[in-house]
Amino acid sequence: MHWIIVPVVLPALLAPLIGFVMRHDITLARVASVTGTTALLAVSIGLVGVATDGTTHLYKLGNWPAPFGIVLVLDRLSALMVLLTAILALIVLLHAIATGWDARGRHFHALFQFQLMGICGAFLTGDVFNLFVFFEVLLIASYGLMIHSGGRERMRAGLQYVVMNLAGSTLFLFALGTLYASTGTLNIADLAVRMTELPAEEAALARVAAILLMIVFAVKAALFPVQFWLPATYANAPAPVAALFAIMTKVGAYAILRVHTIAFGPGVPGTEGLTGTWLFPAAIATIAVGAFGVLGSRRLMPLIAFSVVGSMGTLLVAVAAFSPTATLAALYYMVHSTFAAASLFLIADLVVSQRSSDSLKPQPAILQNGLFATLFFAAAIGMAGMPPLSGFLGKLLVLDALRDPGVIGWAWTAILVGSLLTIVGFARAGSALFWKSTAITASEDPAEDGPPSDQIYTAKAGAAQVAPAAAGLTALAGLALFAGPVATYLEDTSIQLFDRAGYVAAVLETEKGD
Image 1 (cartoon, rainbow, N blue to C red):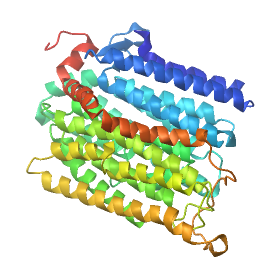
Image 2: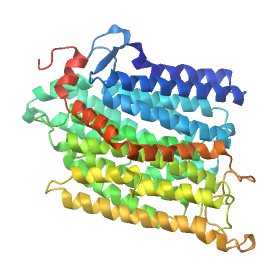
Image 3: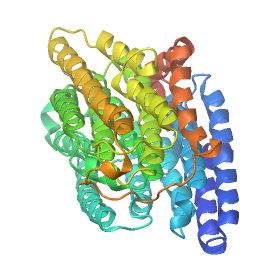
Image 4: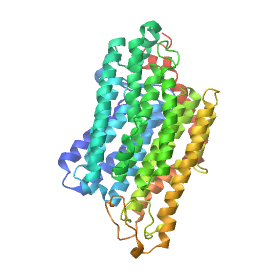
């Protein structure tokens, strides 16, 4: 079925077309980019419908069978992640066009499409080497997007981002070499077979490879102690780019779920329990770093960036359990946190664009102060995990899944205390932005210590500028309203993910149980 490769091929073909043919015509580039992203969304909806039957679908490039050829694998999890990417991409793209961000660099839309190609490819690939390849594609595109429109602080943060990810890519290559040396394969399904056949006393090299891969994925997921690149990167990136990057950390979480559940997870003698033992305390520490970062931030964009760090900690605490119930909770929270983070960045862009900087010191009241205050607090409620939005249900599912005696104390304390600190941090920020600001006049405007705003709107934000952020908040409300059907799909997804025999049989085209 050729539709499986469309999410990779479509942006791959569109990106160079925009970059070489339309780079001097912003209107034409916008039309092409929106049309392509809309088509990607339509295809991703169709793929979710295909995957709902519970079958693992295979696409063999060149008709070479796995593990000898390159394969793309479509199941409920990969279909869900491609759909999430497409929805987020369309929201972000419309915001970038409405606010004029895309016009500040000639290659925004080409890089945007290359980014989508890398993300979708990472979710669909069936082997670890091509996961590395798609990681590099999305990272190269993200380098360009990160420094879009220039600026000293943005370039400095971009350099840190490049250096950190180049180090991660180098480590990824070492991990792949070690893994191939110990198993003779890099296909995920074939790895599952080889690892179960490898005696525990001969699995030392494979354990090293598993830990190296975990470190690489931890870098992508901004997990403690390698989370330090994220706050500076997200805080200094253009707001629409930071919103799109909300899915980037989820690529790391997805890779942990996919690779470590199937190849190194439960039932594998040489590596069983190895990943979770290391992942759980790191996730707890990540929650703490994010929560204290939110509480101590003096600028709006770093505050949101630290909230993303904390949300990744909550997500990976659930992932670390490596059980179907905890994975259901992790997937629900993953979808929620992606929309919550993206909405916050888009709303922050609208707010900061009417202020002299993103400092949390009181300034004169901005235009549409009430509207932006409502949007900000709605998104903050979602990110902090308060009712009635989906964040409350997501954290409730995570807490309910982590009731084992060995983890309940640490997990519940970290999540609940982290949520409280996040609520306090966002409340303080909102008060400075929208309430205290009404009490001062322009002549009393204090000196600012944050970087200047990239743009100052002199008119009210129109419906086209507000609609993308509102769409993200609508997604949070929809997740809460339709939590039952969504949870049913995610339950089936987590069960399918842990059906190692079914995945191996589908990819290697053998009878289940052989």
